[in-house]
Length: 244
Ligand code: ADP
Ligand code: ADP
Image (cartoon, rainbow, N blue to C red; front, top):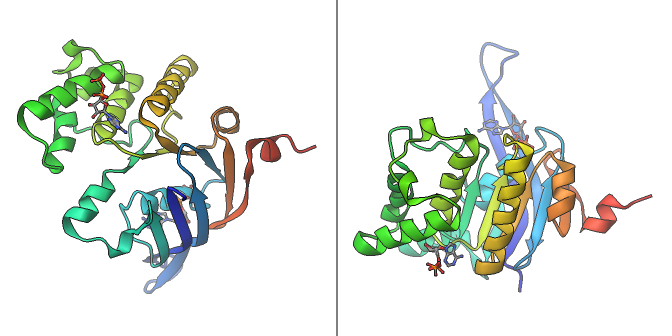
């Protein structure tokens, strides 16, 4: 059974028509995407800027709803879920953006930021405290980092906080949208190692959106290529990268 099944998903944005004084234009960001992700896979999503990758990532992490099509996660159609069931399902998909776009609250300490993520899902008290500590260790943050604010931290450390904030919710699918893009090569490879360890430990599945083809080649088993809002190619790593 696939972990995630995306079928004929469409998303159109209505934007002001800048060529005239009035009226709107429809931007068809995602024009009918079908994609299947199996448990434990690392799927790459590549394509030129503006082809709809980030829009698709927001649809898959259920930050925005598609205009048409279905997103079925572990056999459940997301559109049919309401209330608690929906919240519980949303935990399973976590989107990690590029620093600084991942918006760590500037006034909250590391521990508070991670804690907030648990608050939303009703985990409180000693249980929350223990989970925050454990997840901080897991991503390579130290106990003394707990009270630090984002401003004093490096981009790599902030990304670790961002990862911890997602990870503490025990996700199944992590959607990495240019997550490593603004980091230096040494920090990138440390985080690649971290993502690998987390996959082994928790059975995570990754969707890796990146303009960095060398990275995608290194970490993904399968690669989907987007063009003008559609997936135009979807094949194994070797088929995509080793073509003569
Ligand atoms: P990519 O991530 O591949 O660069 P995006 O998904 O960001 O592509 O954008 C796809 C298209 O949708 C672009 O034409 C972009 O301008 C448009 N778009 C994306 N998000 C919005 C939005 N919130 N409002 C209006 N247009 C948007
Ligand atoms: P330890 O034995 O080192 O405390 P745990 O298995 O308890 O390790 O997990 C450590 C942290 O990892 C916990 O805070 C938990 O919330 C987090 N975690 C992250 N992702 C997952 C996942 N997919 N499944 C289970 N726990 C996860």
